[in-house]
Length: 242
Ligand code: ADP
Ligand code: MG
Image (tube, rainbow, N blue to C red; front, side):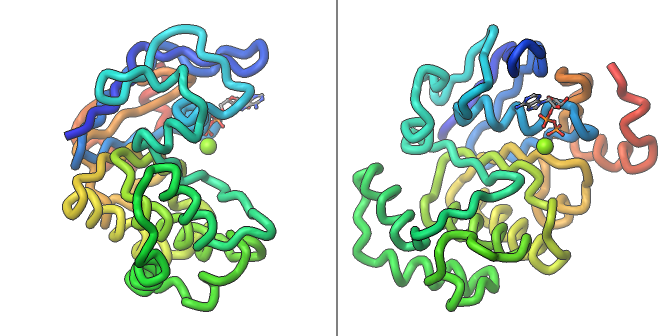
């Protein structure tokens, strides 16, 4: 059982205060959705959790099983069990999926004996074409192919807590269904905890949130059960401007 605890987090980019007093607690097997309009600070939250350069933590803490992650470099946060699926996955020229996964598993001191087989079986499971597995990471992939590729990585690396920044942006309905279903399965099969960031509730058809938190203007203004997402579909975010 793993817990990621975000306590009273405040984050600045340059001179601009973007997040203020954000607190969330995500445990193994749970799905927490953070929903908010454009510019609310959703991607800033994912960047701060993974240690993206340029994001300054002005107060608060982030603990993974009681251990401070904010003092760790990004790669150590990943080894500790945090995994980010970025809104816009990076193209990495000259590096293939197998090489990237092999390096990541080595740093976790996990064996890579059956890595090729594992990648192929995960690719098949979410309809990611086998010929794309051998190309450079995400290079010239469509939006849907990139998110399928990222989902294969998540399934192979088996993190403790996954942060999904707009998994639903830039991909078609079939790709969204396959990726969201794979992650929902991971919450049961490997007890993955999930922080899913999105504008829309359509990905909740597969990936079922236990809690929904509304982020506007850098603050969490309301937290409730999945019924809150349904309410948002009716009222929009305007009703929650805090
Ligand atoms: P969301 O993901 O909810 O759409 P972001 O976290 O991307 O929102 O952005 C929140 C606010 O912070 C926006 O006003 C955005 O312009 C600003 N912001 C984010 N990153 C940077 C940056 N690197 N430099 C300047 N402003 C930024
Ligand atoms: Mg964003």
